[in-house]
Length: 346
Ligand code: FA5
Image (cartoon, rainbow, N blue to C red; front, side, top):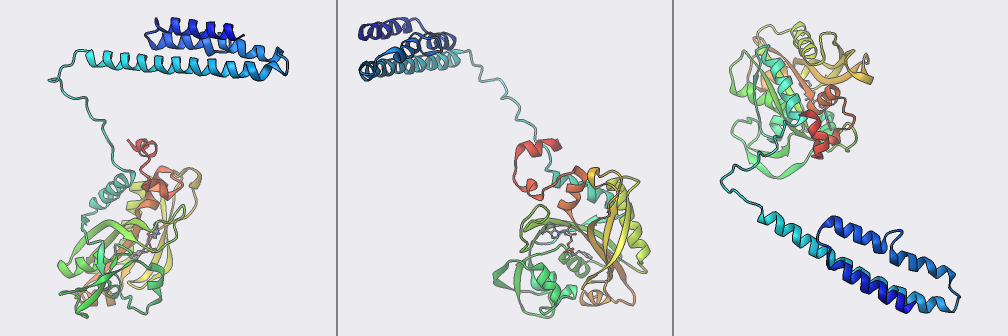
């Protein structure tokens, strides 16, 4: 047995000298350690040995196995070195343009945002923006939500350690700063900086201390809408929202306004949508935004005379719309940057 194994290793070493390619290496490996390989056959013979012989022969087989493994490792190294050398010796033209970088595509939230903004642009709305780090006054007080108002509890957020000396927040000299909880702060900034009439939509990032689940994120996006003019009515609100929903979800989509409460609109509504084009959610009423007529108190706080001016406002969740449009069942997909998910929107 000892001789047989020594012979086997010697033959393997000899044959290995002629192996140069990966295919030859695989064939060689099969001849020695494959299911019908020479070493495998010897190992199978162990079963026929007596109890006393087994440990002795087992030791010899292990030594032979180790020697064969070393031969195979050296061969693999030799084959890989040869492959690299061959790749490097291929003619190289450094003047050729580099291969095109793979084309990316817009993130589904960006696509949905553009789609939403485009529908409102058709109605004469322009895009406005405001900061994500806001003062308490713009985010709450000017929206008729003073510090002790219960509505603040529903929108808890991160307060920054710094305070801010605000020139245009008339009531306070120093204010707390926070991560805005909704884009409604842009309503205030717009009313203070522009002369009505105007119609704006304000997309942007919002932050809330909400527990994360399939439909909630602590960091999400909204699109705010504000139309200030003389004689704006609920009929205008309904007309604008109906147009938007039909543009986004198809001509068969319908809306429903359900009475609700927001401190900055009066009356206030939750707007529900129903459409036959929403897969398993088809023909069910789905809540997608808050809306209402601008509360006269807010107009006053923003320096507009409520006797002259009136307005409508709405705020929708961008993720929720994107989820409906694309049939996405978990909001967390949007932030994980998994290319398998993102590529589907190319
Ligand atoms: C507001 O934020 C109001 N500012 C909306 C508004 C504007 C009302 C103008 C009236 C006039 P609400 O808290 O319901 O309302 O949020 C609006 C939308 O934001 C929700 O319908 C939802 O789509 C989205 N949203 C709220 N919280 C989260 C969250 N944690 N994750 C994802 N989306 C959220």
